[in-house]
Length: 260
Picture 1 (cartoon, rainbow, N blue to C red):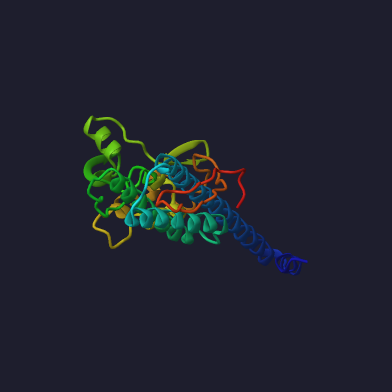
Picture 2 (picture 1 turned 90 degrees about the vertical axis):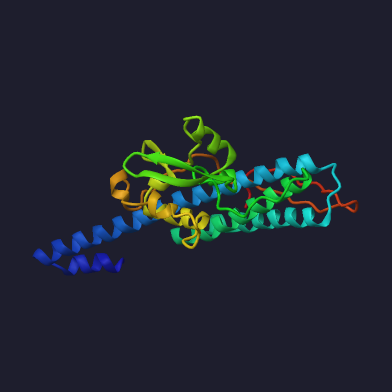
């Protein structure tokens, strides 16, 4: 028998009422943690899947090209980052572990951006933090001034697309999380999702977006676990090929039926 229920059977009167309350509180807390962890896992799965799709498109574009050693090195680094993140995402044991996966994805996306620059004979991109509005967009290219209700105005890192939208007074493409029946920006999803930002925007970076984005989460009405389903789908199975003898890319494979 559950030791907690034994405690309830042995308790009586006021002590019994307190024991019942304590047991319910513990169970509610465990349930909230489980829901939060499931939401974080889905968030990680979606980011891994999007990165894998970006790699697939790049592999298709480069299939007939002969790549130099530096380009192949960057491409392999991106593939390795994807494999590490794909392996780790479904095995998350706590919400805090999310930041490690996200850091791996950020590194992989920078490597992918370097590949694109090399094949286009352009300068390598500056090593910058990801686009704040949607880290799936990859490294930011510039900073923009952006205002969020109740949080004020802040200089934020943005990719070319989001920076252009902000300049044109349009809404950037914001990464959202499903909370109940609403979709909210990831920085308003709750404390359980804070490691998501820590992975993309380390505390020692020059962009103080965590303090700004997650400041006073109670204002946004999502203080606490804030768990929910992130928008997007699940992770697929990605087959990685080898470089062929000519310096080009071998077959990259396709996403399968969701195997891990």
